[in-house]
Image (cartoon, rainbow, N blue to C red):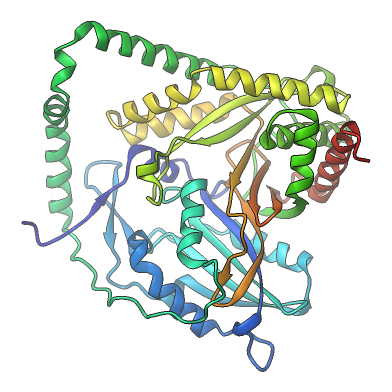
Length: 470
């Protein structure tokens, strides 16, 4: 029995570290706006000590948040080890807006926070507690490296800190004792022994694979066909646009709340899903936004990458990445909002009938048999070939109010990580009857990000009018 402990990163999780650069930090983030309530201090400040103590009391439920990275010698793989110097004060930080702070100031602060890379020598997360917001509110700006979470597992982490009841009582949790970290030699030995055992383990775990070669061959053919379809989609470049150029390290951030019932009403009248309404809205906004830059949108083949969870029920609540990327066309050339939605619906219907999700599962499985260097090189090559123009991700959240120690969560706006040559990203999170849009952009390339937000509002109003609601 070893006297030390470490956890492996999957090749997919490791690739988010490999593709990271000073201009493309790979962390996901969110801004949570809460009522101050019981956490308010007599001077209108926020009880940061109680918040820190509470967060620390919940970390035993998410042990990765007390782990740091360690390198496997003579390789590019990394592992997780317990951080013997973990300090909650480093990770839960305190900031203030000039009172009375408004949402514009909060957006600027959040953009600056999300522009900074996380320190890889420490656990890869931060939560900034921001006081001074007007109307007796405060905010949490939370960011976590993408190698730890995808969008859905990130929602599961909210369930660790937020509760459906406004209780202010909590226990301090069990005492945390870090497990001893292995020496570089021990990591090297164990990891290379594990890699040597993998082929034998695969054979031992799947003996029936050799009992029915015809059935297995059919499965292999289907898997290879799905993989080919997925890679084929990624090989076709989308049209060049002003938002698909090399980006810098600084970010702008903006958000927009929409009434979720209003979105569902449009969906019920015009057909499709909430996600179809989102993609049609984004398509109309991009049309307006690019036309404002004197781009001829009628000749564009513009595509979005849509992360889709492939996490099973058994995997819910676990960290790491379990996502497939659907690539779909956005009909920016279509002027009529109703026909634009119809084209989006047709495109997403084709996606559901395609085998891109199966292809992503095969790719994830195959990636464990390759190297991080090979996978990260493939990802870099893919982003340079521009298979899509931007990422649009929509994560469903709880539709009941949640509380942090009695402080009600009012809104939650997500922030995704930008990829090379992509200056704009759109993320959505539905919560308690609201569809919360978060827009992240390169600071220099899109100084008029708010114009895109206004275009989103106008595009949705066009759909409402098409549905006879305006």
